Image (cartoon, rainbow, N blue to C red):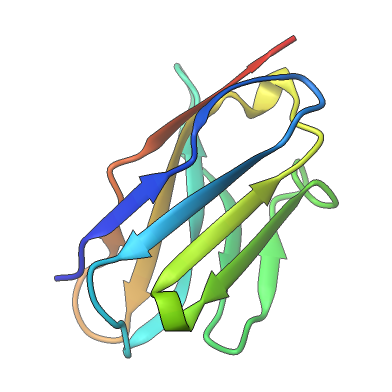
Length: 116
């Protein structure tokens, strides 16, 4: 099982930016998709963005044009650049990897708080 460690969360004012990182403990050769979810208090977990091994990206409508997902295979790291942050973006953000074999890997979560 690969370990995922997120970083980069914090408190930011509305309109500001943050970059989240998700570092894998080893090279992942069997990923079929990876991305980010978020969960705000009282809400269900929401899929935010995904990126495929061929770098195809998909975004939730609520973040299109503001968030960008990228991956650096040389560093075994995935990023979520978040711009023009809104109070509604406040949530715990979780990264994940879907494997060809075995269960999904999850990070521990990182808190993002946007003050209005």
